[in-house]
Image 1: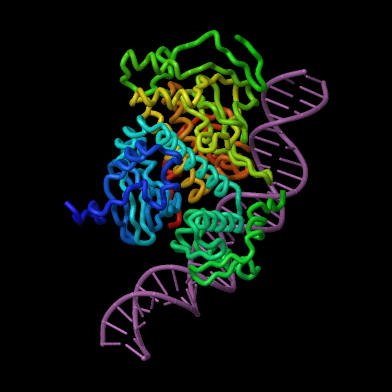
Image 2: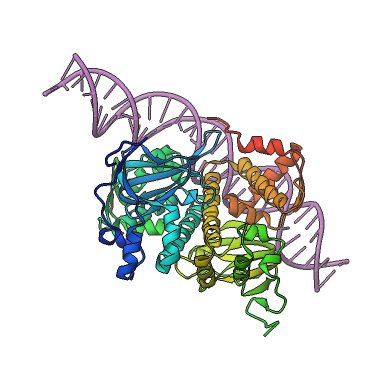
Length: 248
Length: 248
DNA sequence: CGCCGCATTGACGTTCGTCAAGTCTAGTGG
DNA sequence: CCACTAGACTTGACGAACGTCAATGCGGCG
């Protein structure tokens, strides 16, 4: 039963890395578990699954069974309407959880697409519920993960509802680099995994406006932009732009 | 201990209506509970609390202790940045749950303000966690409530990121009237509990644009607008506007 | 009755979207 | 190795949608 090909990705059941040994543990799991609890929590992950760049982990309309913890790689999630409109709702990186949208109706309501080759831990949701009845720290952790997502989306709503193009892009860059830094990457250098169009969709602006705004930042010496390679030269300036509060 | 005045609202502990008898039960609670489970679930609500119009149930920065189920009245939730920007993140009516944002950091990250005199059931969160360890239907229900909020916010992001003014207002009206209808109100008549400015904040547009768009709908015979009294004359037209997909 | 907050409407300006042309880069195949 | 191509990105010119500012209207409440 190992190495079986599935629709869009491969299942890998043989090589299991226990959560208790995983280097992303502090991102995925609650802290301060007893040895006994850790053993229970290791049962959360049923399998691992690799997702090739450009393919999707799940689609809108698919049956929901599991949450996914990203072990490596980079995803976008996006919603689509019947009439073809679509909106990127988030970008996710290692240690983050995707699939929460599926719980309410047992159906996924968005697509999750890998922007680079990725690997995820598959956590069947009924198992999550079962174990979190026994391990209260896990129960609380699950609640926090969901609440964090709600708060994050509040921030996006603020951005979309009240910021102008420069403010949006500045906030976006600062958020990305802050999350990368929390994972041990540089706080000034980053490589964008998404296109200008995907950034624009997330930020509610057109790709041309994204491009122009990058150029503006570059002209002002705030960031160096070489295609998808970004070097943040003046993070303080970006923060000032986000809090600009121009004209009122 | 009854009728004690608190900061911004009154605590009412004497007259307890059990959840099991509450007419909003099917909105707040899971269905199909056993008698024994119902008894446990009735312990969820510690007290009830009235919130006068214009006052707040909780504020950004306050310690989080409880979720609130709205028994009657109408709320808005809004986030504010240091620099004074603010954004309405939602409008909530009877049967809906507010306070989910506070779980992640044990602090509320938004304000909840009553737009009309309201009454809420106070459900201490540690009690929710305790009881949902025993009553799996409640556990699942809590997860669904949070997931539903995430999905709702995806919808708002789509609206803010990709719709134009008329589409936004049409979607807003349809959503409001649909929720009111689910509570037994008319599907054509409604009274707005919020100002044009609050609608605008929620929809990412200025109050003047909200007003103009109402006037446009009125001129087109789609809705009658008399201040805050709205009569939807052609819901199909509103749906067409939402799905307009003009120009691409 | 008169005030005040909310709503409407108009004139004008800014930001961003649209359309179009052109450039850069990576990947492919001769 | 280089030419070629496709996809992504950049840049410019123009226009539409919406924000801004300001005047006016309306309705509820003291």
